[in-house]
Amino acid sequence: QVQLVESGGGLVQTGGSLRLSCAALGNIVSISSMGWYRQAPGKQRELVAGITSGGSTNYADSVKGRFTISRANAKNTVSLQMNSLKPEDTAVYYCNAIMVTTTTLYNRNYWGQGTQVTVSS
Image (cartoon, rainbow, N blue to C red; front, side):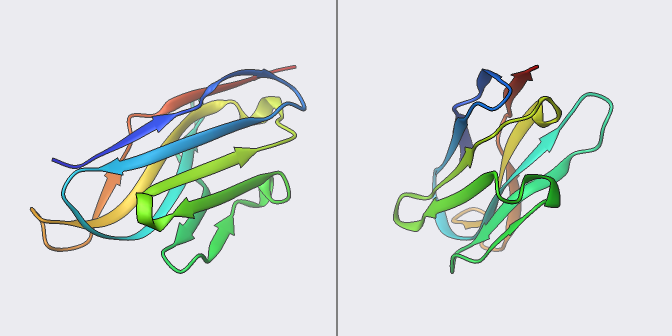
């Protein structure tokens, strides 16, 4: 069984920082891309940041310059450093990974359980 385990959410004041981490656990053969999405109440889930196995990154315009995604391929982990947080960053943040496992033997989309980030004004 494969799972994505997230940690690091919480409550922070405007201008503060948080770091989210996600570990992919289980019978993993390979991971092509990893990333973070978020979903605020009443809104659709949106991509925050993504990173490929080669280290190429992409960010939502709203977080560029404030958030940094990083990945440790050897440990199957991805992190999101969030600085200068704003109230509009408040959402449930989900870890995402496209992985091949010993069960599927093809690329499949996996999601973490989500972690709440709340930024108070």
